[in-house]
Image 1: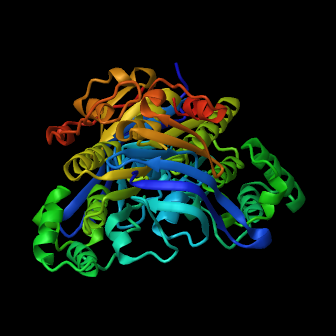
Image 2: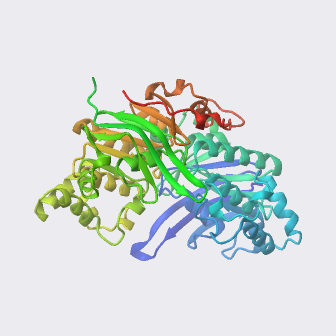
Length: 246
Length: 286
């Protein structure tokens, strides 16, 4: 049974004449422990798939299942224990007036954990930040440190599936290497499943096992990373994308 | 001998704060001819500050000091604020990183481009309109008439960036400073924007300062590269030889990139040496 099963997913925004179909009939499976990439240019609907899974895009049809359990329109609390998301911009995804301790503590509290104090300490250690960052505010952190906090927050409910929306595109290459290494380690330690969106093919090749290429809402091709490394694309759009990123 | 458009000697940008003075740029020297000069480095390495300092866009309490910043032999540091306004846009223009923050959200794109044109040229509105549409066509915008009537929020990031380039190029400057012009765009659009800039640089014989954190892009696109670390230029090399760069910082940056052709389990993490920020700046003068 796959961790995530997306079958015929349509996502749209607006109504009637204004309606924009952002995702059209996306179908793919992500096995437990797998890392799956979504690539494509902006506006191709790759982030929208992640948003539809977490419930941030209200209008969708099709079937989304987590471990064989279909997701209802109203997501239960247990869903957010299983699935968490890390956003693109670490500057925008943390509350500017909440300290790291508050951010993590609130998440843990909402998920009904009792031993919040020890868990905050452990989470900070897990993402390589350590105690001295616990009472800092986001403006006192660098971009990479903020992204570590955002990852710690996503890990707080002990999820099984992590949705990563361009987790390193706002960071420097040297910091990107640190975050990608952190994500690789966390996946190995906790047996996480990743669904990762990126426009950088080499990042996807480094992180993922398989990937789907998207173009204006359609998945045009699903391929293995080996095929990506060998630049073996069957669809003309994918070939074009490969050429552009060389 | 190359004709130097811009000559910067010993440029410092300083910000006084409670604990003394923070040096954002420390003793940078370079010249720019009719070429594409890349400046790479991490965030906080002073690359954007270098670009801004040339246009004297550093606000108080920031201090810009240099032996000289010469544009065609005339020192920009000696100019008054009023004289500087004639330089900005008309002779040196700058494309900022994010089109969302560079365009006025409540004025149509057409009006903004027309304003940029009429500020520097005495032209009638109709001429300015025609010229603006031409410029939008030059940056490969389909349907320029519609874009002229549109507001910035109706544009995608790639279109916004092309509009910015159109607006910056319409006064026909001699030097274009592009501060991370493509980092908000994705690969396919990035290529288009670069091709447009490349074409314009070649056709008009402009000098381009291309500020970026993307080493591969700079290696591919520029002629010469300055690598900055902690406000200093640590290495200068020809862009095509960037992959044989010698400085450990440049090597570290290159090695930290994931590669399509060489899979690895873990990425190399840059180990910083405090010595790098102490060594004197390398001159990028030709």
